[in-house]
Amino acid sequence: MRLQWASATDTGRVRRVNQDAIFADGTLFAVADGMGGHAGGEVASKLAVETISELPLTNGLAEAFKDSFSEANRRIMSKASRSENLRGMGTTLTAALVTVESHRELFLVQNVGDSRAYLLHRGELQQITKDHTYVGELLRSGSITEEQAAHHSQRHVLTKALGVESVVDSDIFKVVPVNGDILLLCSDGLINHVTDGEIEKILSANVPLQQKADQLVESANLSGGTDNISVILVEVVELDSVEQEVDAVSLVVPPQDDQVRPIVRGGPELLSIPRPIDKQSIVRGGRIFTTRVAVFVLLLLLLIGGVLYSVQLYENHSYYVGDSGGVVVIFHGHPGGLLWYSPSVVRVSSLHMNSLNSVEAEAIKSKVPEPSLAAAESYVRNLQARVKQQSFIAKHPLGLSTTSTTSTTSTTSTTSTTSTTGPGAG
Image (cartoon, rainbow, N blue to C red; front, side, top):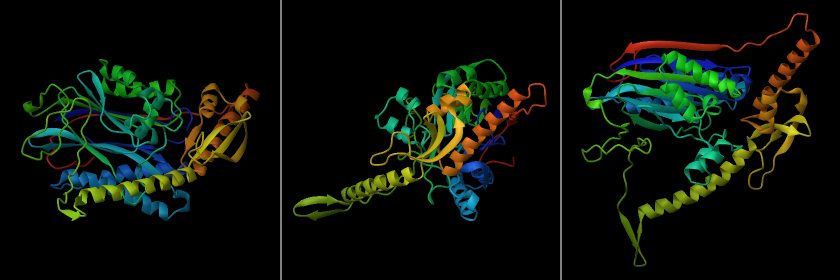
């Protein structure tokens, strides 16, 4: 498979530090979005991409790829446990691996969190991954609409991330591309401000791939740029196998009966490893009580208990920055409260809403969720620094002024790769 790829990452217009990390070497591509304070997010995202880039060349490539996420999770938790400043850090991670299965060249796509993978197939954009967020769960259950999800106050609340729990439960997909397809990996700094329709339009334009990556970042910044923005584009220039010229995106799972299941046009199909089912049954009181039913009841009880525990745990670790009487305030809890919990004020800053620009003020009015008190305080300090800088420039128009610049890194490469077992060196 001959590929061309390009990437771009940017701090955005509000954040002072870029906590995203990206990796691309022609065989493995990855985007991570860190969280957990000023330093923790950077450390977690960098550690995640470094870990999976060490993916060993083995025969069981799919399992090795999945295990690399577990190893990244272990390393992040281990490092956080050894440093008070890094406690609570975590990261999302979305990665794509080029490989060959049954004489077909394909991408293995794996994700944890809300960084996404898309595929532009013959001019049509399709989201491959599923967001591991509270709002994403509501959307998939039918509790809210797409429009409501786009403006939900809790759309950034994650349900899964690396570094949060000892066992990581990632999703992994198989995507068989055709010539001309473009795979997009991105952090939520892009999708928070650029719609799928706009992404599709930019990717479909007849311009160089690097220009498309830069335009995606620029569009997110022009629409607010309230978070770090990272994108990787991978274009399939040429496939080695003519068998892969299909009419639609092929999303294949290992067959159960020597027959490949038909493609599913409505969305990607999750690659899952089947678990053995105990078919024995126990006869009690003249009725058949199967092991499956017993397991179901037990899982249901555990689920209910887990939900109640998760609500309490989530509320205890939820913070957001908002407006209270024209002053920027840090709240403990989440906007509107949750069940029997109500948000409470934990920090009142000296920053007034009328000192912010329109983008910052709108973000505060909409409430900015943060994963920890340290992260919320860092966000407020960044705003205060920006206001102080602007005030200094206004008072000294003829003197020396301090300017803040945002660094954007872009790279583009082309390679011819035929992968049989795993990625080569970057």
